[in-house]
Image 1 (cartoon, rainbow, N blue to C red):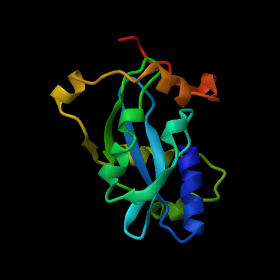
Image 2 (image 1 turned 180 degrees about the horizontal axis):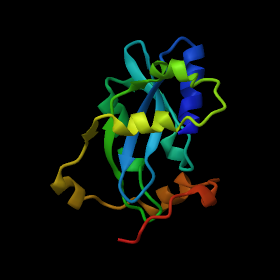
Image 3 (image 1 turned 90 degrees about the vertical axis):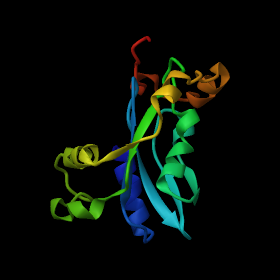
Image 4 (image 1 turned 60 degrees about the vertical axis):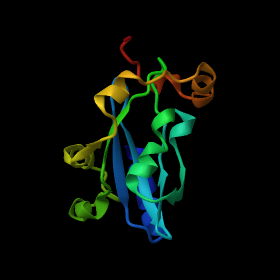
Length: 157
């Protein structure tokens, strides 16, 4: 969350709106990304222990398409593909009165507001049941150089 907020603030310095999108998961951490629109296309900046869940070039026509670019790479350490929902972009300017950019106070209100936003499901029940696990080689590459203390510990299925 903090990395996405920082990225949104940096994007704002480059004349983009400070926008966040929440991606919800099951048996895994949720993931928040700063999103931006360039020449009519969406891109993202995010921080994750999984190398494959970070930056996306601004080549996606809409937020769903951008989110789906993460789908096959959004898995837990058991290899389960865990991405299930996403929010629409939330503009951080709505928190200007709370000085979200510079306050030294707790900013958990941003995460609370993001969590309260409507989220859109991305899979049907049948699709959920038929998901293949992530390949072991991809799992190793995705976690190369990760801080394993910060990696979510999923419940065994």
